[in-house]
Image (tube, rainbow over all chains, first blue to last red):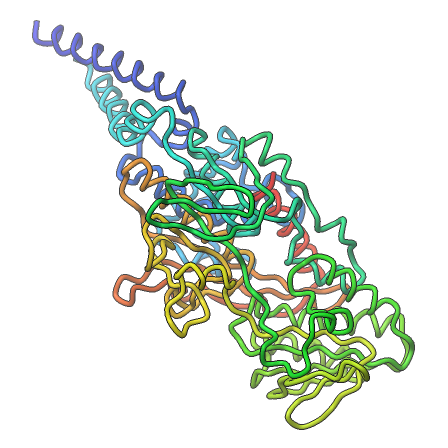
Length: 120
Length: 424
C-alpha cells in the first residue's frame, strides 16, 4: 500500500518536473541545454562566467587551436588536469589551466561538453 | 518503491531546483525585460552586446557607434607589416543585426542624463535600463609641441585601426632604400602594451627583406620594453641588429612639421616615415559626463562587475577603465572581450534580479616578431575580495618560452575565433 502511494507521488513529481522543464525548454531551450542535471550546486551564470572567456581562442574552427565543441566532458577535464600538472605539453594551456580549481575545471569541462548542443 | 526510481526522480527535482531562478526569468519577464544601450562597437561593447543577446534574447540591445563596420585593432600591425590588407581585418555587423536582433545606431553620443536614464546622440534621445560604455581610448597630443590637426598626415598614430593604418602601411611599403622609420612610444598605460614593439618588429622584418640600408629607430618614453621585453629583445638582436635602434627614456616632446623631424629632450631626428603614438586617456565624453574621478585619466569602475563607481545603471568596460580601480589587467582586446562578458552577466543578473557571480577573465596576447614567427603572453584573472581588485592568479601567468611559426599560426587563428565570438 505504502509502496503504491510512494510510487504514485514519485510519478506525479516526475510528470510535474517534465512539464516544468518542457515549459522552460520551450521558452528558452538554451538554459536547459547548459545546465547539468547531476550538478545543481553551481548556477548557470557561474558556469558561463568561468567558461565564456575560453571562447576567445577556442571557437568552432579546428585550425591550429582546437575547438572544444563536440568533445566529451572526461576528455576535456583530463586534458586540463594534465596541463595543470605539466604532464601534457603546451606552454599556453599549462599557464591557463593553473588559473582554475579542480571544481572550476569540472564546471568548464561540463559546460563545453554541452556546447555541441548549445552551438554558442 | 524502487529506490533507483526515487533517486532518478530526485535527480529530476535537482534539475528543476537548479533552474528555479531561470524559470522565474522566463515566465514572469518573457516580454519587455529591459533595454540595454551599448556605446562603442569595439571589442568590449560587441562582446557585452552579443553575450546578453545569446543568453537573454528578450532583452532589447542597441549599440551606438559612428562606424558602420568593425575594423580590428589587433592584427592591424599585420597590415602595416604588409602581411594582410585592411579588408582582412574589416567586418560588417550584419550577423549581430540579423541573427541576434541587435540594433545599430550610427550616430555620435552627446551626453548622458543618469537621472532620467537617457543617452542623447546628435539626432535622438534613447532611454535605457542599463547603459554599457565601451568607448576605447582618446589620443592626447597636448604634450606634443607644434602639433596641428594636419600633422596627422606626416605623423600618423595608426593606433585606432582605420585610414591611418592604411596610410602608415603605404608609407612603409613605399619607403626608399636608405630610409629611416621612427616609431614613438608613449608612457603607459596605453592601449595594447606590446603593440608598438610588434609593429617595430614587423616593419623591420619587411625592411630587411625588401629595402636596402634602411633603419628603424624606436623612441620609447618608457624605461624599457613594456611587454614581452626579453622575447622582443632576443628577436631584435638575432634578426634586426643592423636595422633596429632602440632608445629607452626617449619620449617625443615635439615635431617639426616642415622638416619631418621628431624632437626629444636630447635630439632631433629626421624621419622618412614617422609613427607618432601619443599618450592616451579615456575619451572626453566620459569626463564630460562625470564618469572619471577628478584628476584621473581613466574611468572609475567597480571591479566586481564593471559598474561605474560614480553613476547607477552605468557600466564601463575596455580600455577606458582605470587600472588603479580594476587592478593590473592590460588594455588588450582579449581583456576587453572578457570584461564585456563579465559585464553582460552582471547586467543580466541585475535585470532578472539574480545574484551576481565573481568575475573570471583571461588574457592571451599574441605578437609577431617577424613575418614568420610569433610570441605570446597569457594570464587568468579573478576577483580578489581583500584588495577589491581583479588580480592575476598565482602560477597562471606567463610567456611563450620562445618564438615560433606555430605561434604565428595561433595568432591568426585566435583573431579569427575571437572576431567570430564577437561578430559571428
